[in-house]
Length: 278
Image (cartoon, rainbow, N blue to C red; front, side):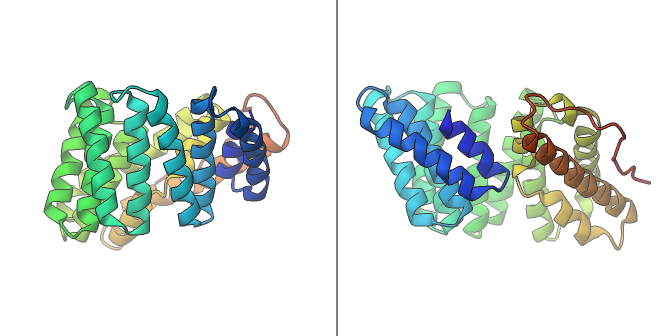
């Protein structure tokens, strides 16, 4: 519907077009809040993402809170969507620098996921990782690294070491180690991260749908920063990071071209544009 299409446009950076679609969705759903609360909550969640893209933090918080209130009205207290709602509120608070609100909401999300799935589930590990990011922002570097490492073990075991969640968390962990003056001891992990990213873009990206490809590109890739920081001493790392960065740009251009043609499925390029690392 309009809401999902609007969120896809937001991910592509077409914010005005995204706003038009999301507003249409809200106009349709708001009169039916009583009988379609979860559909309205999902649309409000997407609207909050748009506000965050525009750094409209107050509006982003308001729409997330409205979405969570709708879920609380109809879902049982143990439903995982409630935990995800608390997580979204916590991560928004973390982005805004409201660390106490972030701590409260993220702890709530973690306790719910832990009760639902136990400690060894990847959704619980995601909450552990988010608490680690919060600890780092609070200046508790050792505690943050401990939580990220704990999450990494679960991601690697449950999802596999090449899964995007495993790689994203590894990037966060390596950045914390770098900031704590412990980069050199984790060079092997950084090379693993860069090579896995490279393999994902070169051999697996075209198997994904356009939406999945965009989700893969959404996060700021911390491995680039790490590679730049270590490039003088380790030129092989610099080459891997450069190859990955150029491949990311090429993939995004292909997605944008496919979207403009309104093609239902992505077509592989006639010639490979990947830059091979030395």
